[in-house]
Length: 453
Image (cartoon, rainbow, N blue to C red; front, side):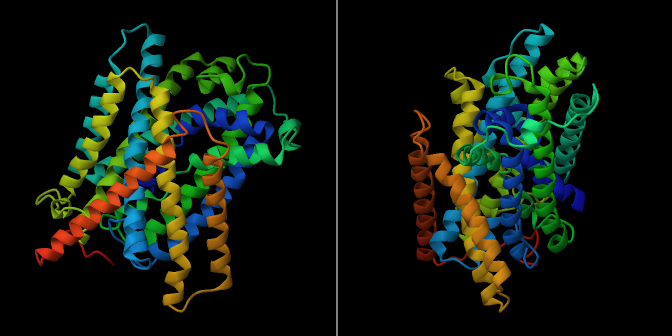
């Protein structure tokens, strides 16, 4: 995979289109005129996490993502916890995205006057196509992901350009002077702003497919964090400004980009942005299945899952069984929830929150591991400690903001569901490990590449 294709994996997992299409309005509801600042602060925090991740990615590369990095430093329990946190996060994110995809598909078909399609059928088609692409060739899927997101982002830039310059540029003093913004409201908005970035590190799961991984992966991680942050900050400022005088307000609009396209006199772009949102949800789901499959692949090779997950396809050289397993974990809950009649946005919210817990756990653990790793190489500095503590502090603020004040049902149950899932995964891994030890077999490596470069 070329550096641009590796970058495409992380960008697709962030799903930049989904943030202006859904999340910015929620951040505005909490932070008001400070929405752009919440994203600016989140960019700094996520960039600090990226710097900790790159302490590892500049020296080693594998399919295991952050799991492989923590396994080098932390006790076995915590490295397995990191692996399961990531698998849960990627799988739940993919399920959440099928909910968003079905919702936007319904809106698009309704606006075109076409008959509705069963959400369960849409979910089956989306996951089936994504799983097939990940099974066949990660290079094809990465190219497709980057191309689709580039088209979506280009359309958004056109809408934002008309919003800012259509009637002559003028600064929004209320936003720039943070009118009505308090520390509490900014902290709450920061939580959701950080949620927009989850998955930016997914290029680290391509250590065995990337060309020159010790250079291309660190660049992909850093660029995806910074570029996404700049894009989100710009879009939040433009959306808040564009909704001045519009009804419903930004925090109540179900399709804010569609509304801005109509205000700019570009109704065709409104339909195009609905298509772009669907594309973004699909490409992100594809990226999540790709990343989850590669982490499960590395777990299988290391004995933390059944050894069959550590086998590569003899011809395609992809972790085919791990990808099939990840696809099934996405497909079954997604179809069940859709058939039970739950709204797509509810599915997106519930599963997205579960995914966030997983990402935050993985990010905190890799930031704890980074200074220990540097110390083992006699390279620990005060600067690296400050970067680690700063990243951990921002992630803990986000975690605390997800727990307090106690949210309404069913969100109040989600932390406990996440705990049960990760505890069950850890227990299963140790069962697999003990079974392998009793059989006196060591995990077999496949012929793709060495685990560490």
